[in-house]
Length: 415
Image (cartoon, rainbow, N blue to C red):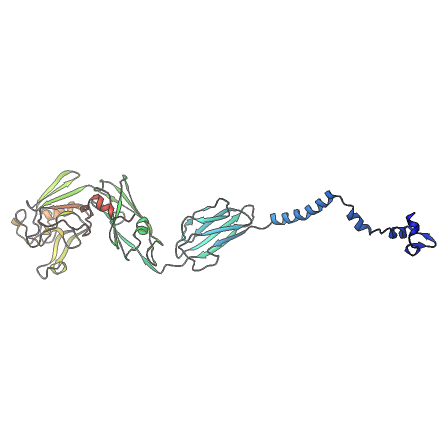
């Protein structure tokens, strides 16, 4: 037998072969190693899978991490980019962004719901609180930041006044305190709507003036809403709007007065029917009255008129002109006249360019034409002058955009 050829030094004990000696002589290995060596292939696979399962479990239990931009704690965050909330190792369940002005920013998730982006940029000079939660998480992530204030700003002064009632010729006119370079951006931030509905278009007369009107005069009784959403709109490089407001005003009855300076008569029509007729006196041959469509933009029961303010030297200075209603920025009025002979009205054009009606000093005589016309009028009423011997007034000279065709008006829009 093979055992008999092994040296006696390998495992002899008291002249006999011990079991330990035989096993050692046969090259046996420790029991632990032997057990491992006897494992089946299926057992080996299970052992390897145990390690992978542990790694997967750790990965599956990773905590979702939410990141907010602008970074929480920022004191002068940019307001020209949207707010973003992202998550890693998870998906977003909810996001809210609330400002200390009481407004919230809405937004949308991407398709994977790992990113949320606000639909609009945050407002300047506002503190925001962002509250976000990941799917399956028990805790919310809360971040706060404050946007910086803009450096240079502009606003738009509008006419007519809020909650006022005007005549059918009243445009919505906005004058800006800073020249506007990006007209399209500013015009898109301003909307004018009407009830009953009608198409309304904006027209730029200059870098600081934008008017809105429909194709024809407003219908009587129209409700008009002006929406100024200029806050943080960049009108020019580094110059931002600050307004965010809605205002409404109304259109009253329709009154259109036509002044014919060949006959020196003014006919007043109210809602399409003749309301009154008055003899008038217009501009003389040296100082003709503008022709065209004009709109009453200011009204004064009494006012001072001084020739030097319209480039006519010291030809006149009347401290108490009664019932004056402005038609142009350059100084054309329809007003009462107490210093001319009564016979002038209806027979001669003797003024320095205004349309005059017989009136009484003190503006309190209700029997005279100047008083009556003033009392029947309102801002926004239309006064049409024809046969004056003068060219049509510039559309920008007062609230007189009706002298432009609809095509020319629309051509002045930036959007």
